[in-house]
Length: 479
Image 1 (cartoon, rainbow, N blue to C red):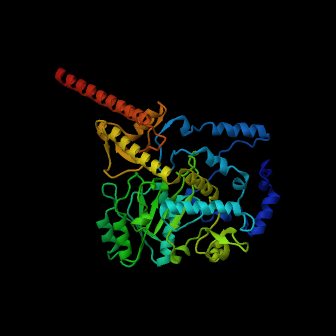
Image 2: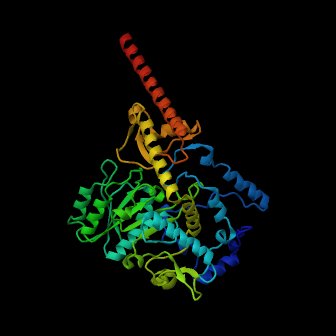
Image 3: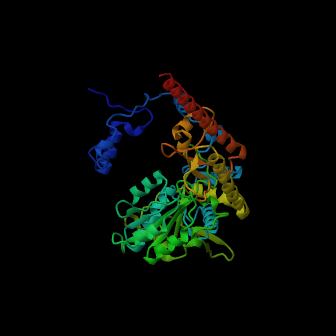
């Protein structure tokens, strides 16, 4: 008889405990929890894990060994972006969020947690000022969820199901959004032209027989997956509003110290991620999503996330902080809620609030100007290399794509070669295309080093090709 496996420090692996848990939920076996997972994507075998360590010291050594395989971007020259960015995090941000009242405060209620609620109210206020919007939610898990929720809000508000996608969207984000909205919304894509939305094609699709009367929203990303700053937001808003739809703008707030906020160009819902505002990369990033709307109950009441507001108390001159429109959330409505609201990323909202308070309008303006200028400098330096070109001519913030085919190079070849020099040159987006990211931490010298390394590769490839051609010609003459 096989002895049941009981893990030395996972109590619910004990047969009696497992049986009690199954009985409590009315299940015969654990398999019942996975019936919705298609067989073809199941692993079909046990996880390849080491035998349990009985000593805590051995377990610690093993885990530290695994973590030691990672190399942080602080130890390499990094031009990686694609959703997680290497911005500077002021020391005061970490100091504040590591205080016990913030770090360990999970939920809390209005009568007992005014300090945390005030911090989140101030975050919301600062974000609203940056975006020139009236209402900003307590952060969701990440920007992917925030965007999916924003599109769902548009669908619920209008009773329509069509979403017109007009930008290049980060593939991971598009996948997450598609999964989230697939049961009630349909995504329709319009190809970009020179990196930007094709307003004429968007108008034609929105007014076509295929979508007539069923467009809930036009969805535009700015900066796009490839870093292009959309210049046609006003035109897209007009197209959406003409058919009773809304404009949803997915964005990164880091550039709005200098760029015109989407709200000033007709956007109805603005959403995205706040990782760029005081959050570290941390091997994939600390992420949190925001949703911003105008002071319009038809939008506000579709927001599932918590909102904190300022309220007077019975004591003259004193104020408190508590939930706004609590009755619209799944906390109040439970299974009848419009959308589930669970664990938020409130700590990261406090981090972003500290960061914005520290930077102020002038600091955010200087940051935006620095990002624009260094992005342009990097574009010029790389495009000056023979055979390398930019894939579009749009204005870019932080990221841009280069095509290296003309230099006889491949994107993966560049990555492999430069990693040996301690450089992460970017994210491979195609056989010959590379997405390069610069931030305020990318100095002119850093950019020059990247350009020189790529130039050296291109020149080596050209020399090798010339030598091969010369050798071929010699052989032909000899023949």
